[in-house]
Image 1 (spheres, one colour):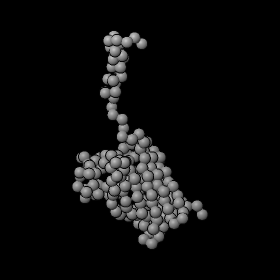
Image 2 (cartoon, one colour):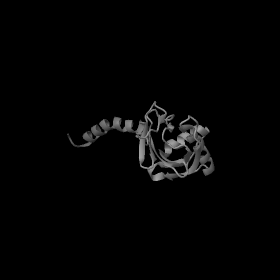
Image 3 (spheres, helix red, strand yellow):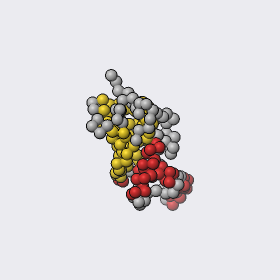
Image 4 (cartoon, one colour):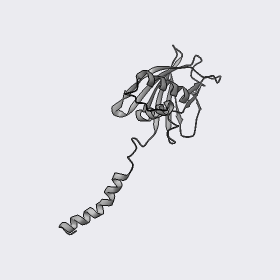
Length: 179
């Protein structure tokens, strides 16, 4: 390629459309994958399912804002307000039914924000006096926001483990441990 002022002008003319496109393009998504995961351990002593659920913090803020019909910040909104919204959201989006089909009670324990990782951990318990085998779980967290949302929960009862996956468009799953 020739050198000199004409060459520099030619390079600038060729680069301009790319630069303009980069400046006008919408910002990239914070994360291209929409997933959440949960660990659910059955405590035979308390007869409760102890759940720790991990979500992307920004997605959960958006879900709470939609529920509240106003902006919600995990760091700036009063903690009692965020906790009340989180409880209401989880009651509607992480549903557990006992073997008889009755809705199992859910008890909020708290949350942990790991801001550097855009990670939020939600902790709650579910009453299951009859045990965890045969209960039905509907894990629809963030599915109203993202059509490609994929949720996974690992359910443990002592040495028994079952992983339930909730892909887009699919709902309730039954916990069944192998005999």
